[in-house]
Length: 299
Image (cartoon, rainbow, N blue to C red; front, side, top):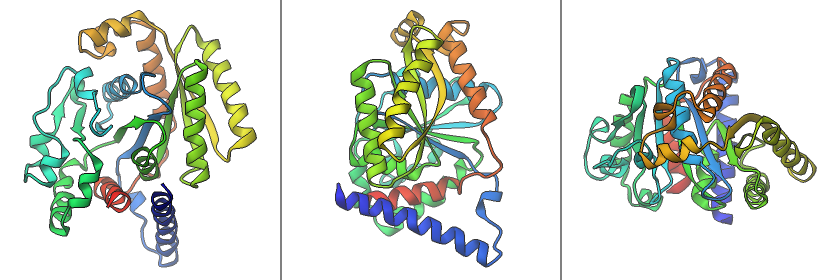
């Protein structure tokens, strides 16, 4: 973990240095070019509805005119494809090691949401040759016409999750009002703060009875984080504990499609509109640069 943290810190410092050099040399920043906004969604523990949130948020954003790619980064345990009713034949490693084209691997879901299956083990990046790395980065030019890349990571405190958090522009943390969920979410933020990976995060509280429970849960959680950690939190909203969600999962269909008028569907639409409202002119460095960061962390 210490070696991993050192890599994360080096990457952050290098990014700061590059930004300073661009300003000093009067170079037009890459951020001025329209690039996708990269969001990592994670949780302190499994079973809190993270993947369901990612899939339905992506559909909600796509419905209001945004082009979204889901990168299922929960290596070996990803289930975004199941929630969308798919069984992908290939994954990102077939592009890297098998010579497949990006378009052969991408799965298109409701309203045009794209899914890039993550494969079964981030450690395989260590096996990449320089040529495989460069070829893969070239193929990613196909994905440049995107507004959002939403990464669905694994849960808990481990090197994969911390690595993906370090690569994103925004972090969304999913929790529930349950004490165990809040404790695990706090532990994840504690690691993020300790290793100086980032100083901010947005929070979604899932499975609440009503809006008051969501806000109260966030306020208590935020008080503890403010007191002990160097992380600034922002409340994005809540997701109602709705039976329609369970029924949609059993049907292997996103609840925003099966039950668009349900309480939880209205919640996700509100969160999507709030995310759109938080957009700023500054955007990321593109898909190639995003994966370069991943390769730097995990290789």
